Amino acid sequence: MLIDTHSHLSDRRFDNDRSEVLARCRAEGVAFIIEIGAAFGFEGNETARGIAENNEAVAFTVGLHPHDASRMNDDQWARLEHLAATHPKVVGVGETGLDFYYNHSTPEEQKAALARHVELARKNGLPLIIHDRDAHEQVFDVLEAENAFDGPGVFHCFSGDWAFAKRVLDRGWMLALGGVVTFPKALETHEVARKAPLRHLLLETDCPYLTPVPHRGKRNEPWMTRFVAERIASLREIPVKEVLLATGENALRSFDLERLI
Image: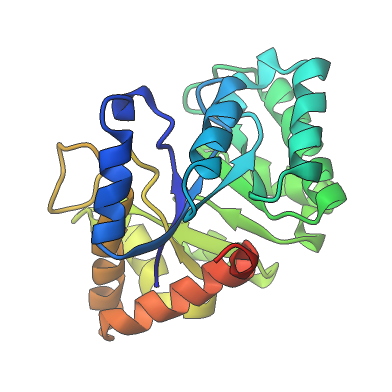
């Protein structure tokens, strides 16, 4: 089962050929795609909803990206709460978290937004999708303080070392690996891919970003998740079918996708 657990097909780079991309995914054997609503401002949630409603093999998440934490308002939040509580194809909350690389919103604003997302996920029994850039310790501290590890969650595009990965795994959470694992110099990510239990790994693209080898320089698409699986299999010295089966089952379980398939 080839499942992309983190895509941004709502990105305007897909505006001219989104239907063709989805058709290509079906042809390449992609079983399911999770479209992330928390991108490109609040309206990304509405775009993600439209993609999911018009495509049987697409579900979506709701939230506001940490970049947009400073722009979050009560009206937007009420609409997110309504979607999370009522839409049958909402399977997660996020991506949310902390990004101290760009700092488009202040650390305080980002932490407050993350705490609010934790409560939204808890209230609706949904997994959290965590964005963590240059903020490993800080994001972990907020998650612990808010008791987020009492519920399910995923560190999207995991970028920490093996020591940090073990802390996340000890809390029972999932690690999602994408195109970075195919980069020759991503040695820390390679170590995580080798050592993490398969039952805690998910595949993703984060498309249109982080295109895997051998397609670097091109727009990333969900079907390219296959190259992520192949690289993980190579690093672990196991058949790629074993990676696809395990990560597919993990995705079904983590996001309760069986009710949609």
